[in-house]
Length: 324
Image 1 (cartoon, one colour):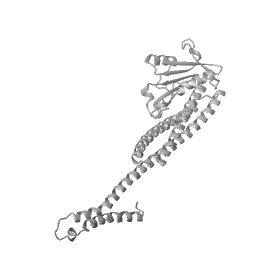
Image 2 (cartoon, rainbow, N blue to C red; image 1 turned 180 degrees about the vertical axis):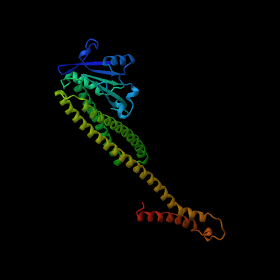
Image 3 (cartoon, rainbow, N blue to C red; image 1 turned 135 degrees about the vertical axis):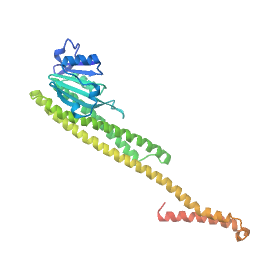
Image 4 (spheres, rainbow, N blue to C red; image 1 turned 90 degrees about the vertical axis):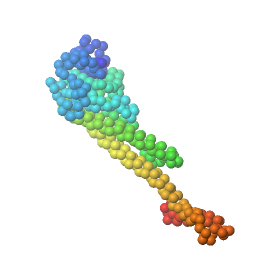
């Protein structure tokens, strides 16, 4: 599918017919293009557009390059980022003269919100360069929103780890299992956002050299510089969130170890407490004629009392030593 936009009064308008308004089109958005649509765009531009396999290559030379006067820039962007499992896929921006072409195979929210906002208000969309910068600013704003959500979720996880509401050990175990799953999802999301921001950071540096030096070009360069600073700060914040998630993972594993050590401690104490009574019972369970207590009227109560005392004494000693 191809959507084409023209500029009217510093606003974007969806072109009624690509063929009728070819000379006025400043932005052509290719979403899941067919072979025929790719061929039509290539014939229109006079250059070849990258295939999906070429877009997914990770080396810089395949993502940022100049060919036949056109600047090709590819960044990895998320879609469905409201969930913890966003769809990550590359998007290619092709800038040539007064025409911007975007090629994508998924639906980042910025590609839905930016055209609507640019149609309703004059936000400085005067040519392909300013449209590209505005689109990138919307993408960065969206990534910032996702990182803010991750930050809030991490604070909730931190409270669940260090201030658990469950009092029963079995309930805490279930909570820790869920927390570990949540930590894994948040780490995956933060890692994806960091990868996306890294690709945008490289793209911004490349774009600064592609923008012209006219009046609009100077304004666009200033916006790209600001965009680059924003991306850098967000990348640092994403790295901080990843470090915090790693800390929460270590803390959760430490809490689980404490719970397990407590259980082992209780079992060990129970074994030690009941060991002396078991010894006493084993002694008096032996059948020998030479045992004087066998014919003593107070022998049975004495054996029971001895077992009780032998159980209480180790427990009292452990408490006094502070081991319990």
